[in-house]
Length: 156
Length: 279
Image (cartoon, rainbow over all chains, first blue to last red; front, side, top):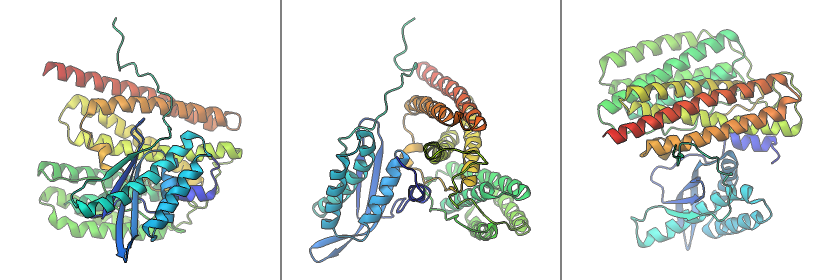
């Protein structure tokens, strides 16, 4: 990964980082292999038939590459309608096919979290008490496991 | 009182960042001392919340620190201290309230007397001292500093939360050592980031990271993370070794410190297991 000034700006001060008080929808993208996750919070405005993302925030329990992906993708998703956001997700996931899995997983986690948040918004219309929607990613970024001598200790 | 905890958390971090970005010895000394005092206030307020059974978390606002002159940030820190003072009316512990109030009074006075200085901590020069690193090594160092400065802040907050909710002297001794060690690492990495013009405030940590239900599992995962961090330090040391003996030795030094953390965490796991089998 090329660490240029633009990347440093995203790392030092990521766009939209944090949570939202009383969000309209919450979605989680999760890596089942290592427990890393991205949580996306939305405030949504209804204008005619198309809901629009009014405010978006994210939190990442993940590596810095995921934070950068969250900063970029949530910045693009600000103030767009759901249709445009779906296109953004599709473009992002399409682009990831050209990346090594360990790099693709970080962006995929953000994209599926956004998808989960929008689905959460739609489903809450039927069931307002619905908790956050969680989608798991397909790519793998789990490092090779390091043996921990305290787990399954050998019999002496 | 929850607002008091949040505002003190924010003031502590703002003051710590000011200390990291300062290049004047006296300013740095004063700001470091004051950030330590604000951290202690934070832990005392937290203890008061726990004693009174109040639910709380470590959520906070983002903290803007990008300034060209130190005086701008100092003015902001004084404003934060004024806010804290107003919130003190909600503190029922008179001794704690008086202690914080008198500390704030002196700190605002002393901050007003610090010499102003130009800040270089955000100029993205991406150079550490006069060490010549190629683009790849500079990139690796930059990524490492961002990852690890956040990680150290995360560890400070997690171990502090565990310590605040534990009355086990054996474990609390271990937690305190790990907190102190992470403070040292956070400061060391922060100093490097400031010099390289890439200083940033660690991001807010998610509640699920410190509101841990299975501490033993958390410690076992933590041991894996420490082993991975050691490997990163070793790789970074190798990457910069041909360019800078000083940097290579520094990352080896950090790497070897992790060995002791791992041993302490193993002791803590063994202690948990012994307690569980006893009871």
